[in-house]
Length: 418
Image (tube, rainbow, N blue to C red; front, side, top):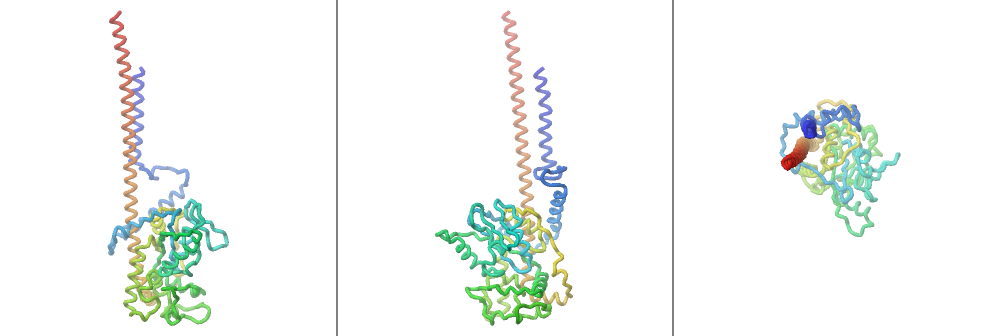
């Protein structure tokens, strides 16, 4: 009777184990397709997450027609960011590229062991490493404009190490910092119109230093576009007609090594050679940065940042297309004029956009491979558990049979003796 009971109970146990393995094939690990609800997030959040995935992949068909060849090293950007050690994230903030929004994400929207402390009414937040009074982030909203207002690549690379060592003056030995530069780029025409509207409202950035090789540009090297305190009310035509307007090709200038072209000395070489060197330098610096995002691709920017640094944001990025630049109506002739004034920026942006989308596609494919590997390993683990349980039950049944056989033999031997 007991033997029959053990045989009967073996059947449902084996069925349950088979169901568990089958479930992993139909509803693999990290899949939400079989969950009617989750405890930590509601239906709205699940729908939002699904929509985000769809938005991320909606233009995968567009990004397959790539024209530039990048190495795997260019595409597989991953930083083992040691927030407790000597790693410092340096944000190069180019005007009117959505840098303010992205900078606020860094200080107010990050999932950190020790979140940044932001006091209402103050522009700067305290972003210390866990257990240390030392900042891991070098940006406008953490350390302030420590290297000047909207410092460019030339300024930051020479200034940031000095500032960090000065802040770490209690340490007698100079630290070997690991600086990870990040930035945001934007479509050149939209960025240019946005800067014009900003200047039209009174912005000047007059406190910017523009340091290069240890000195600011002279008045002759960088003449002012206006007289007076600011350029309030400037028309688009006047804005475009100033040859020394730093809005022209701003993204290339701020990402390039200006020392390669004699800084702001325009007489050091002809304009064509200067532009070629600046563009090549900006492309190389952008490609070698730890990360850059594009204003026009907010969800993909968030995704690539999280993949690069293995850090997570609390809330998803939102795409806002109703900007001041978008509200400016210009005809084709004006658009061509702006593109001509920003020809270097236009080429840089096309380069950056393709690199960005190739990185995105590479990371999505890599993530899918990682998820398939995890699912396969989970199935193998369940299969091993299933086999081990079958073997255990088989051994138990065999031992029980041996016990029954031994009892029968003892009984028979006793009958013979009698």
